[in-house]
Length: 217
Image (tube, rainbow, N blue to C red; front, side):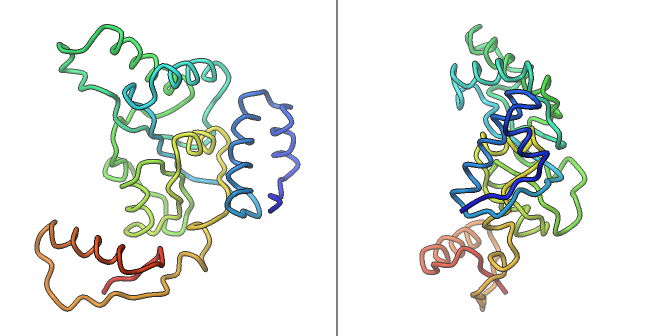
């Protein structure tokens, strides 16, 4: 599948606006080809994972530190929790704390909001229904699509980072209306009272239904 790029996007891909922006476009272009995206579209908000040092390790620190010299976020960007509570550091090694703060400094240098939350929808004003966002946090992607009427795929830390830098995302999968529209409706004939009830409903629905978009009622 060929992803159609604008002249501006082609220039960025060809490093006419720097290597870092080109890297971001290459990431999105690879994802776009793999997901049969026809083009890239603007996103109104990006939420990043890959903030915890335990998650990304030394390689992640090196990547972020190096690219933060040039990368700047074009989309409003919030970030996931880091690897420790800032008020409880007694049992952490100095190396862990140092590396964690390098990650934080890199993201802030690129332009992120220091939200440190996996539920950014509880903290910030949401875009209008139907708008596109790019969320790497699993629960945020589910809430965005299923509750708030926003459009996002479940992004990886790298794809969301690329969206933050470019302000774009591939137009594919759950960003497309015909794919989002549910083909199956699950009728619930009993009252759901606890988190366990909802968990069981979700588990058996997922086991029984092949479609990824389902309506419950």
